[in-house]
Structure formats: C-alpha cells, structure tokens
Length: 322
Image 1 (cartoon, rainbow, N blue to C red):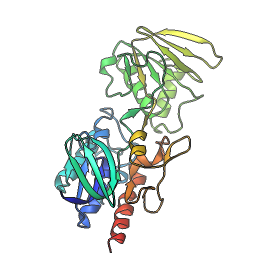
Image 2 (cartoon, one colour; image 1 turned 135 degrees about the horizontal axis):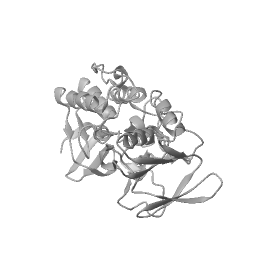
Image 3 (cartoon, rainbow, N blue to C red; image 1 turned 135 degrees about the vertical axis):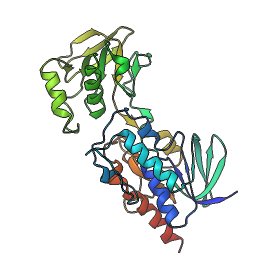
C-alpha cells in the first residue's frame, strides 16, 4: 500500500490550498471529500455574494477574476474547481472518511471505499454539514429547513425565519421579495452587527416599515404542522400561522469525528487544541486547517484569514523531514 506524505480531509478552499502547497514541494498528497469540490460553497444559497472581495478569496496567488466588487457563489465554484482541474490535484470525491487511527508513526484513514496510509494528516472539514439544532418539539417536521438555497419555493407562503445573521437576513429579504409573508424570530435585541453592510439597512428598513415582521428578544419554542409558538421578551407565548420555518441558526464542526481522531476539545466552545505556529494538534503530525479550528466559534475563521494555514503546515512537515 502506498504511504502518502500527506492526506487531506476536505476539498474546500483551504484543503485545496494545502494540496497546492504539498504539490509545489513534491509531497505526495491526496484529498478525500465526501461531496464535490468545495462542497460547502456548492450548497450555499444560489445567489449569495461573499462579504470578501475577490483578491481575499484567492489561494496560491492564483488571480480570482470577478466582474463584480463582491464575487458570488457561481464565480467561486468556477474559480476553485478550475484550480483543482488545472493543477491536477489528487482528489477522491464522494468518499466519506469513517475513522482515523494511528499505528506507530503512520495514520490509517478508513473511508467508505478503502483504507489509506499517510505520514501526515490534515483535517480541513469546515463546519457547514451539521446544523446547530434548536432542540425544540417539531424541529424534525418536513417544513423545517436548516439550509436555504433560493426563494421561489416560498412564494405566497407564511415563512418564519429564525436568526439574524447574514443567512437569516438574506433568506428573509429574498423570500419577502418573491411574495412570502415573512416573520423573523430573533433572540437578540437587534439585527447582527456582522450582517453585510450593504444588506443591513435594507432589512432594518423593511422591518421598520412593517413589510417584514420581526420579534426581537424572542425565542421559538415549538413547531406544529400549521403554526409556530414563540416566547417574547416578556415571557408571553404567541402562536402564529406558518407554512415553513427557515432555521438559520448556524452550523457546527463534526466534534465527534475530531474527538475520535484523538484531538482534545477545550471549554464550552469545544475549541480543538492546536499549536498556533504549526497548526499541529495534540496528536503528532495531525493538523487542522480552516474554519474547523474555531470550534463553536465558527465566525473566527474564514477563507481570507486561514489561507496561511496551508504554508504553516507544509513548512512544518518539510522542516521535520530534513
């Protein structure tokens, strides 16, 4: 069986960047991805635009050409998938990693298809695959959606949007403009300050004029087939008619997978242990890259500030091979 220099779990932008660094330094590499290339971006809302400008989304100094000030989902897919094709990166798609174990100095990575052996392992799995559940009665009903792609299915429907982040605000505005009757249930006292600066005035004005209803300092407590119950800031319970719930409550890394791989998780936010200078975890030669580093604090890392993880990891691996 071939012993790889480095195996990377996850073909997101940072996983691709790790592979590019490995390729440039003549390290044998393989990316294992359970979906398509940049699978999380593929599952983003169809018309989403990034907060970052194109140059901040670039990897390996490959220019990201965009005709708009803020590139959108389709441009990003073209960019990252194009890099994977042009650079002929070694990627196995639609193959899920089931478990990781270490035998002496080598990692054994078992997948749905086979087992691989590698000297070094990078986990760059992001956080978009596991919804942050509300854990309330009725959350498992078919009308509850934790992922939003486009507004058209919700025309002329009564929609409850849970949350006040970028995803919640985008869903509320887009469904409203396609004819939905939108109510937002927001746990905080205002729209999140992290909402894109060109979108925030739009949602605040729609709420102020009453086009979109919003209940602040409120919490959804139960979902039924045709209604939703929520509690307001006074503790009073309200029931409203409802066809769909868009629960834009965020997403989490696969903490069970990290634990089972031997990585220590710290504190209430389950921050994984890693060396800030090398990205190495408490398991020797097992590294983290990208947003998975943040634990429950998924807002800490994104493409533009975690691109450097790839060079940090590869430089560490090279320094130990001398």
